[in-house]
Image (cartoon, rainbow, N blue to C red; front, side, top):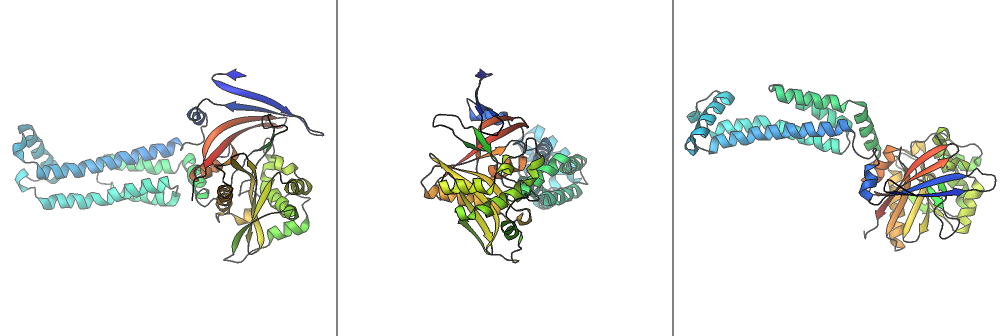
Amino acid sequence: MRMGGQVFLISERVKKDEPFELFIRMRYNKVSSLAQEVPHLPKPSSIKTAQIVLVLKLALVLFMLVLALLLLVIPDSFSSGWSSYRSKTIDTMFGLAPQEYKAGHFGIVAINLAPSIILIALTLFFIHRRKRMASIILALLALWFSSNNVIQLVLSFAVVVLLFTRSSRSYFAAGADAPGAEVPAEAERQEETEPTAEPESEKETASEDAEGERSGTKPEAAAAARRKPSADPVVEIREADAGDAEVVHALMMEAFEEYRAAVPPSSALDETVESVRAALESGSESAAILYEDGIPGAMVRFRYDEDAIYFFRLSVLPARRKRGYARQLVQWIEQRGRSKGLAISRCRVRQSVHRNLILYENMGYEIKDQELIVRPGGTVKTLTLEKNLGPY
């Protein structure tokens, strides 16, 4: 079905003892048009405005510096208009006669403006790096150095206010997770009932900041996941086999528990140890477990899909956050794909989970497709993200 330049592919899934699920797959003629449909990826307007104001401040400061230099190097004889302008400007800026303006006065101007230039540039840098505290401190310092200029003072105050808005806090909070990969993606895994069919069933990957654990998991597996490693643990990633199904399931249940109240709830919560073991035994999917001092702390499941490696159910225990384990697992997946000669690393994320989008965007993933999944419990908008796996 075609509507508004988009192609909608509709399919149903009916399995024994399960309600049907309806998938509406939206394929866009251009990737750029898809990006325009996703409002969550761009920076919030408060951050954009703050950056524009900072650039304006920087432009004004640099203009003053260049003007001071021109007043020094361009003589009055350049033109009658310039002579008059130069005389008035020097008198306004320094209270001097034109012939009294020397190189030393320009040096004073440069020294006075240098802190403002450095502070503005650093503020822009740390905003781009999503470092909230550093950005705020630098913005406040820039405000203090602007006290002798009303325009600069107003602009600096506006930047400080913008950095304290709610949308800015969310932007910085998401960024705090992304560089260390503390917040993994929540992806949708899809299986095919026949070779030519569209993908029809979905699974999601977990966020690293999930809490709780699913009841019914084998006690020994859950206990292993909760043991504390040393202060400086040895971290290693190993591929799992069918014998690790209980550990894989325990990690996934604890990470996905927060999605039990989501609308719709994550289908990960419906999985069992037996279903995970069966998938690993059959070879239809694989898994990798990250260990701290031999203690399982995170895992990811994956499968090979033609020229791509597709990963899902990325799960990091809540107690193992802020350690970059999600990023390490994704990098392990990418390296595995390269070793198999695959060209693409692929995953799915919920469109509503902004932090996941930022994480993958920072790791070089791009949006390739969008999908709307309609289930009795609600609808889920997902994005397909891909990264080209070039040589190391």
